[in-house]
Image (cartoon, rainbow, N blue to C red):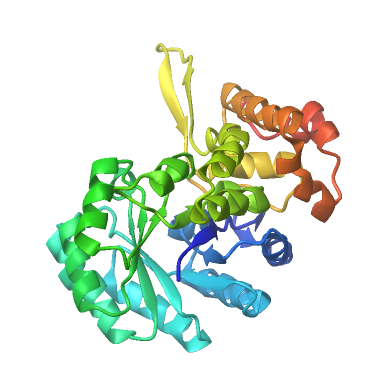
Length: 343
């Protein structure tokens, strides 16, 4: 069921707190034209943690209606509260959505056993018609559903046959494959590790829930499809073309302060939203407490985007075709990014 490129959809905003629903509609249409297999709505890339549940539900409904079976809707209904996740999934279920992403419960730190017994099992039993995808990302949540508990879920719950894997730990992924068997989809949660995960015989990932596909859907789908067909050479060629964009999902710089240098990490979705604004896609700002990039961080985003534009212009050509923008102008004229960094 989960094979190919699924886009972790970025939520475009108007101002600091209002979703740009017309922009959201355009992004959905752009993704469908790019050939993606599905859209994850209100995942963490979509800033679910800072968008209230009223808007959360509106976004899920609008995207599902717009997709209209052209691609799979995956509703981001996970939470650090099982009750809240139940409420969100009830709404998705009533819409007829057949897949939902459950991020590991963040901050309160349940054990893997608790994640299985107090969070995922109750959800999967209560909604037998929905396919659930646990999202394992310990670097963000401070906890982790382990391969052993994932395998128990897969063995006992008929609607748990995939995982979004963002541990960065290849050995952990190999254990997941070993314990869960071949009838289980491992989806990359890190764009830059997708090629390695899909070509590894110990992992055998079946695709990616991608951030970069927000602005390069056709290319990411082309990469994953080539790898699914066993064409590693073609997959590697596309992966190399996309690599500069993979490098901007997280941007790290060292910045001066009156008290000495300090590290600054611009984390997803900030760098990608910044690039989308530069390219002319619907984006808007991030929701606070995410803010802006530094000037040095913005320079890295521009450098990597220019590398793609100059060396593999076909990657971003669909942006030109769909949104009618001049990428040469937008990538090289300061007027398009002068307000996108702290001063």
